[in-house]
Image 1 (cartoon, rainbow, N blue to C red):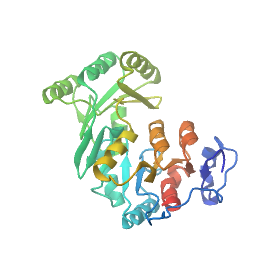
Image 2: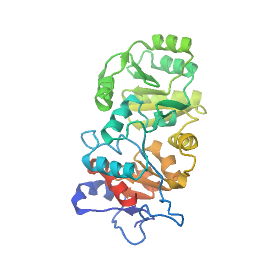
Image 3: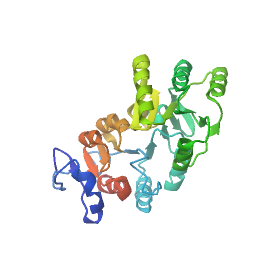
Amino acid sequence: MTNGKVFIFQWSKIAEFPYLLKTYFCTFIGALAPKSNSTNSTNRPMYQLALSDIDGTLLNADREVSAALKAQVARLTANEIPFILISSRMPQAMTHLQDDLGISGLPLICYNGGWVLVDGEPIHSESIPLDIIRAVAALQRGTSLSVQLFHADEWYVESMDFYAKREENNTKVTPSVREIADTLADWTARKLGAHKIMVMGEPTGIDQMVAQLEQAFDNELHLYRSKDTYLEIASKRISKLTGIEQLIAHKYPGVSLAECIAFGDNYNDIEMLQAVGLGVAVANAKQEVLAVADVVVAGNKADGVAEGLGAYL
């Protein structure tokens, strides 16, 4: 244990050493490690609900779910512990992973908490208003930035450029191509907003977009820089934590946050990991995520989530 963090270390996963060494000098697991999913005095398992981020956390180097993960999720299912996917992704980019894991039909927390589905129906929706979408479109005009708009299962791009093709490959979903003005006209008529806006392009262009949006909409928007060339925009009224709270209230009212275990790797996972009973970071997580996690397991490319499920559930 180092600085209150517990690491699971296996010699077979020595490939993860670069990630661990960048933050911690030495690690070991000992008697003070968090307990597995033992029962309390009422014979109720310590953790009733498991949640995991997808990209950078759940998927392996081939952007797939591994056999080891499938086995662990099947074990949870047999023990009636739901395994919930929680991501900035759209629903269609998550349901095929549910199919692979044998958990089709379970709830989904999409768009970082902006769209929560139970039994295939939305129980919570929080979107970006049309006037802000228009402002983003105005800032993009005349630049080389790529803007992508999302609402529920709708995904619109202006062209199948490099970024659209990469996202299509990563998510196994194909976007619809049309001008932003056409999407705005359609959504205005249907009184819809965006559950997520993605802006992609050169870092300097993203820098300028962030500065302008912060100045104009600091109280209204989350501006999440997942990488230098990617900006994800969402309503400031949502987060993965609010998504979990909505899910618990509607589907699992007998479960508390303290009875949840969650896995993540990036900035938008921090609040979630801090709030649940056991916040687990994969070894390749951002420095700030490693700092707040209760436990650090192997990286996503070395079955960290499967490892954590086996150790703590």
